[in-house]
Image (cartoon, rainbow, N blue to C red; front, side, top):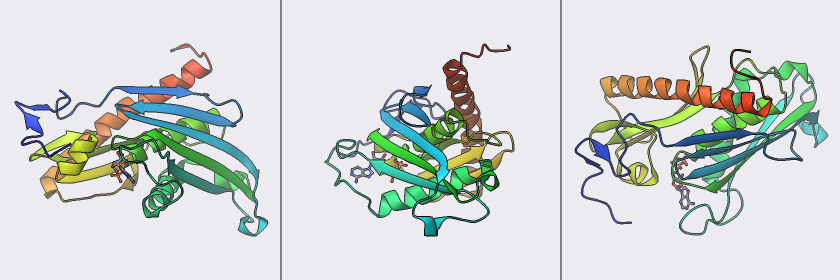
Amino acid sequence: MEKPEKLIVDGKRLDGRAPDELRPLKIEAGVLKRADGSAYVELGANKVLAAVYGPREMHPRHEQQPDIAVLRCRYAMAPFSVEERKRPGPDRRSVEISKVTREAIEPVLFLELYPRSVIDVFIEVLQADAGTRTAGINAAAVALADAGVPMRDLVSAVAVGKVDGTIVLDLTKEEDQWGTTDMPVAIVPRKKMITLLQMDGHFTGAEFKQALDLAFNACERIYEAQRQALRERYAIKQGG
Ligand code: ADP
């Protein structure tokens, strides 16, 4: 696709959304039989699966930590997940995303409960349209809860940015590509603690505050959808 002249026309984005509107979000918990916990997330055209194994004994053993469990995250994109076939296997980007995903999730886990163990989180991107790292974090948090791993809270994540001079929520591929700023954020909702904040581009101080407010608000909605997915999985009636 060539760069459109404008990414926002009459206050609407190319896909018809308002600047502060999230793409359609769908979350399902417990979608894989063999994983201890799993989740599937769709956010607009993004389709992401997360699978959790463990806590289980860490192999290789020399990577065991005597006092805590190790959280191991692997983010991977399927070759068919993007327009041009992606070469399979890890690359710089997926290694970086795996690392920031681990750092975004680690603070909610009680790793001290499982010395010498490992908790594996596999994130597989089946279809990508910008925002896959945040979709992956949302899926991973639900998959960990589905696995019954003790957690202080979930982690909710979304990207915000700047497109045609406007602060926007949840950028599409086109907006990410041709916008000026992309800022993925992950939050531990109850503590309002930020566990991931990256920025590609720049904001003024006021824009940063506006973008962060937008991310916090959207994470509240994502958090509710995550909890709803877990309620549906275990058929717990609301208010019951
Ligand atoms: P995120 O998916 O978290 O937004 P990036 O900002 O790095 O991460 O990527 C934005 C989007 O660019 C991805 O969601 C995907 O649609 C696209 N993309 C990333 N890597 C590739 C790749 N190797 N080939 C084609 N498209 C890619």
